[in-house]
Each structure stands twice: as C-alpha cells, then as structure tokens.
Image 1 (tube, rainbow, N blue to C red):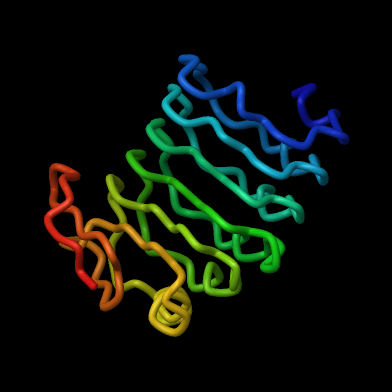
Image 2 (image 1 turned 90 degrees about the vertical axis):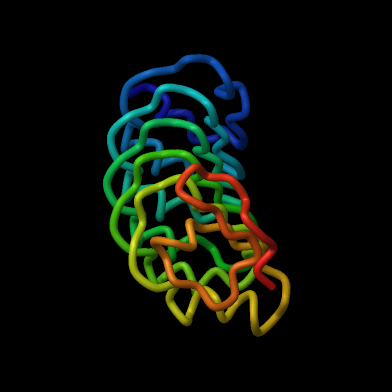
Amino acid sequence: STLGNLSKLEYMIILNHNSISGTIPSDLGRLSMLLGFDADYNELTGSIPTTFGNLRNLENLNLRGNNLSGTIPSTLGNLNSSVMESISLIDNSLTGTIPTELGRLIRLSNLWLSGNDLTGTMPDEVWGLQCGRGMLNIAVDCIEVKCPCCQWCYDVDNICEEECV
C-alpha cells in the first residue's frame, strides 16, 4: 500500500467509524514516526500485522470493534517499552493466548482484550505489570482467560460482571 511510504506520518486518527474494510497492510510497520494507530469500529479483517512490532514510537494502538482474527502478535512486545501506553483490541475475533512478550511494555497502562476468543492464563509477565505497579488496567473475558489481577471481568456477552480487584 502507499500508506507505508508516508515515513513522516505521526498519527492516524481519521480511520475511526469509517466502515473501512479489508486487511491492515503489513507495510504500515515501516511508519517509524507513527505515535498512534486508531482504527476502531471499522470492518477490518485478517490478522494484526506482525510488522506492527517495528513501530518503535507507537504510544497507542486501538483496533477495537473490527473483525480481526488470528493471534495477538508476540512482536507487539518489541514496541518501545518506554513509550507504549495503550493497546485496545476489544470486540474482534482474536484467538489463542496472550503473548508473554507484552510484559516487556513496562509503561503500558491499558490492555483491553475483552470480546475476543482468547484462552489460557494471563501470563505472569503481563499481569505482574498491574499487580506489581498497580498502574495497568486489564480487561479480558474472565471465563476464557484466567487472570488473577484483571480489573474488569466480562461475561460471554461482553458485559462487565464485576470489578475484580
């Protein structure tokens, strides 16, 4: 895509609620100056590009409310741990487990993953960010993902059942 050639681009916010369909181009991982990628509530499909792990200045990744599938790329743990603050992947069709590599993102304050088909246990490296520092807001589907430290538990209808902490 030609978007990957916009090397000075810092923020993509115009993509919210625009009925944009198709897959996310992997060459967006070349946008080294990108601070935020915000494309919530569109009709995006396919997987989250592993190349997003190359976005060393990324502070915010919001892909909420699309139809993304596949796993959460472990390469997101390669993001710059001193700047990455928020990841929202709520209400997609993501599967698999939560990557332990996300525990490298020591400045992460929000990790919103509910409304997906994730399974397993919240990795110690990730929930340790919240329990150890008390700074990370974590939201998952507590029936599918065991998490001793999540702040918000969601049931199968993605309704917040309780504050867990």
